[in-house]
Length: 442
Image (tube, rainbow, N blue to C red; front, side):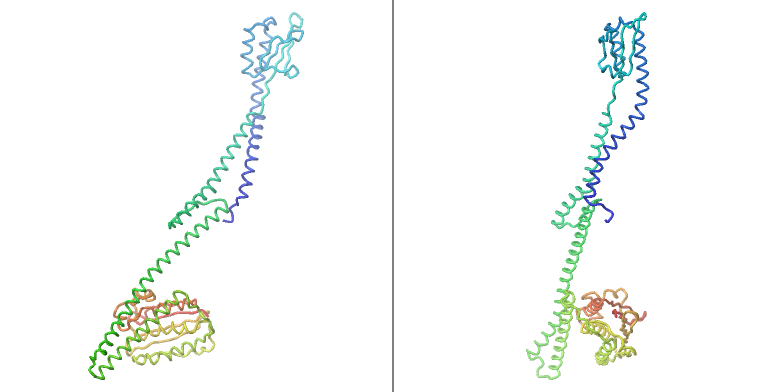
């Protein structure tokens, strides 16, 4: 782009071409005519002049007035571009060709004597060759230069501008598939580049809008499905209590109420996840960075989830890092608690009784790395990238007991990426065991 010339520079170049090229053509033709063609013409003219002198000197002066002889001499002189004037001995004009000039312009004068007496004079003229050929050549070159400049302007200015006009109308009609011709003019090329950037941005915007609309419809359908299941169960048990089907049985009443509480907790968790995801998706919630002590963060998480794991007879193993107090970073404590909590919650749900969960972290280079590893069945390789997609819940056997919205891992990755970090998953080995590994810049 920087190597292109602007419109002003091209205008100056065009004017210089129109002024200089025709003049150069004129001078070139003049030089060619003077030093190449003139030599050949002069030699031929001298030969013709010698012949004409021979004709005149070989004829008796009495024939000078003979029309036949005059016509014969005229037919020779005109093609040879030689002018001839015949004068009597008193200097009066006897006959002359149409191209004869003034006496003082004659290039040759012949005195004719008969019997020793002057009988007359013959004057010979060479036709003056003008510069008409050079002038015509200059005019032709000037016309060609103007046509060339006009063609170049049409190619690099008019054509791209017309294409931009057509593209603008197509964009107004919703058609973003267009291509504009390139131009050597800097301003036109800049506008062309801006058009392409605008078209690319509009295409990306429409694609993103379409994806968001599709995701919105999918989200609404998923929300309706996920909320309907516990609501139906809750309504069913409440209906039984209302209709007195417990029959005063305290155990049955307690069981019905326990199920209702479980479904209410599930509804609360679903709504909480959906609300958190919606806030992250719409960017309504921005990060509130503050100094975070890595050791304290992970120790609090271990203390929070150790009783939950113990209820399922799962061992949550966490070793305090000896350099814990020295490692701090800027982050949103609340969001980090939620992200890591979602990962631990996922590990607890998918680890069978008698299993274990390992939580660990370290400061490596300019980032903090952490790992959460469980002894559960692991995640099939084909699903390892899908588990971070919103509402993805894998095989029915993996989420039937939980009944979540499939947003926990998606929220965790979004929070990590909001901190300019990353989160990934793999299996420990072929026998299973999910390993969630992530990092955050220090």
